[in-house]
Amino acid sequence: MLKNYFKIAIAVLRRRKFFTFISLFGISFTLTILLVLTAFIDKVASNTYPDRKRDRSLYISRLSQEGKDASSSGPVSFYFLSHYAGSLKTPVKIAISSLFNGTNTYVNNKKIALNYKFTNAEYWEILEYDFLEGKAFNKQQVDNADKVAVISADMKKDYFGDVPSAVGQYIEADNVKYRVIGVVKSVPITSYMTYSDIYLPYTVAKDGEYKSYKVY
Image 1: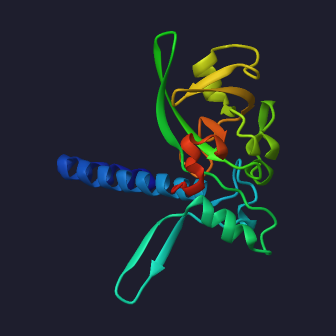
Image 2 (image 1 turned 180 degrees about the vertical axis):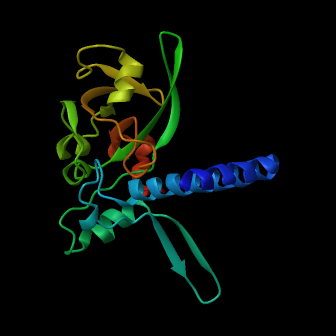
């Protein structure tokens, strides 16, 4: 019985092949989009590497000002997060990081596109990155504006090749050389709040830019 039903359905579909194709393609495309969208939302919203404490975290990415006649909004400054959010008694710790910025560097005449971001020391205490080599920079290194960097595993491979260890070597970003002190498991770019190729102390931002850095 079921075999006969299947044969009848195939025969009906063959009568108008173009409309059958449009219908099947539309259904398949819609299901694909829904699956991709669901996977993306799950990736962004769930407690995944390295943000395994997301259920205990609050993100501040934009600041809005509402007035009687006008309103405005924009990225949060470092001063706001350190001075106002940092004075709150409820948070256990406060991590501050910039959005990632893109630049190009050259190794053996080969251009490498990379992204870098600035963080404070507490960033590494809250987010649980898997260190494959070395360790994160600490508060003293941040306060001293040491030119040190933590890089991703993908960046290590692209920049240094198949070397046993990248710790102690130097990497150039935005025309400045930094000493690598740690290598972490790479984060996908869809996790834009934690993704980067290179992580730097916020105090090494050029010209003391961090004092009013607009992407923190």
